[in-house]
Length: 180
Image (cartoon, rainbow, N blue to C red; front, side, top):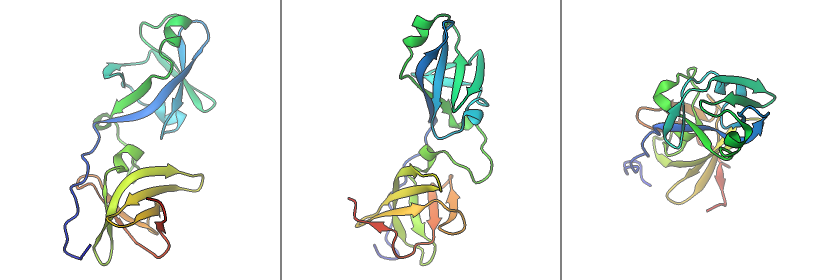
């Protein structure tokens, strides 16, 4: 792509963010065990309203149990009712949550356009966020190549703008991958 070629329109920001999945029951009184996605168990407990299959609800109680969260849901009073919810995904409305400055949900990053800092050229679009112990990697699909860009602020990531849905990066040799 040339210096003045236009990048494709970025994907719209997601309205809902998936934050966990009900993986099991806990006890006989209808409590469910939730596996957090993209957030810690502690942060998951700070969210007030969740959505399951598009329906909002407020848990009656939430508590951290190891790396999981135990929740008591409205109208779920026994183990059989809780078991029927296994594999259900819990979401939150993005506008209801304030993250600390510089923190983003993985789902927000996917679909953003990536540009090189200098020269200001289109690199590609984030297709996936990979999580590793040291840091996350953004898989960026460009017009001709795919790149794995470490999500390390001030080294590789110069700026993330959620309004324009753009990420400005410092591209260096070796970030491209053989993947298609």
